[in-house]
Length: 438
Image 1: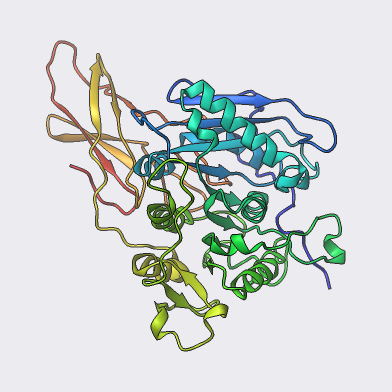
Image 2: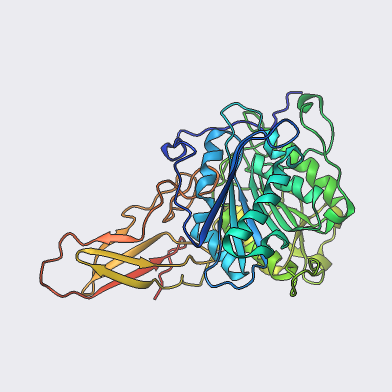
């Protein structure tokens, strides 16, 4: 039987934003910081890598690190250069006093992705070194000791899951988009080293998130092996009582689609419980009294007490709110939102140029801004929000769910403003659910 190595395929998109060289990326001025390491010898990380981190302004003590890990292939690796600049993921990090970290492995096209996406090949050691060095750069030495929340796409999912299995005591939660670690030897995947599942890993919340066209409803093609691998991983971990769920994206293949609109609230729920109240304390255990369960590949969830089938074969969901969002996601990814986004701040006018600051809505991010002059709408930024993989979004999205390059700026030119005239300007934020700020 033909099996595709789902998480290790080199995948390069045709997006021009992902064709920039590795030395072209946004400047890392505070609250951003960056370190870069050269390639090492065999037995260590053989690719150069740089890590960019965002620190929530004003935070006195970082409680954790949220890692946004790109996938395999040169294009996906380059997309990691903007991961720390994602306003939506920053909103999650800020809520929990966490840093947001995005690696970018400089993997040449067609090189063996396993040499970084298996953390045992040097990437785990480089990651932990970067936390020490970035902690020193940013004035947050606690960075090297705090827990990790991991999100990974494709090979990044393989990496994030591998970190759970090798460092379970450090991982608060892990979201595995289209990639999971290999647990059983397979002749068709003979070059990939297998993992075992330590007992401590069973206490780490994990979510497997394949696209339906990756072997669930579409059984052929380049990524048809993703679902069988996810199913194998889920059954092995859940069968031992592990806290693992499955959320099949009903619209996509290997692209990330609208996954962030479930991943962010799921991580929010896990971090709200797992992060220790005091520095140095161990991670908190997930509670059991509000757990919801759902049949594997099902579309309805119920409280665990009402689930009539075998619990150790069921999708694990941490609470009722996440379960409700999960039901919407597996149906059509249209998770509802009733909360408007934060209002923009610090509006500045310099001649005909407007600039402002804004934070993303935790639930739905930012789609655009509406610009008004003297009570009349004169434009939107961007003029036409785009996203080839999901909901249109202010920063745009690349294949591995990171902002497009160059980064979109919060600026607007009022070309029709008349010299010498006074005007009153107003900027309104719009989230991806269509809700407007004050």
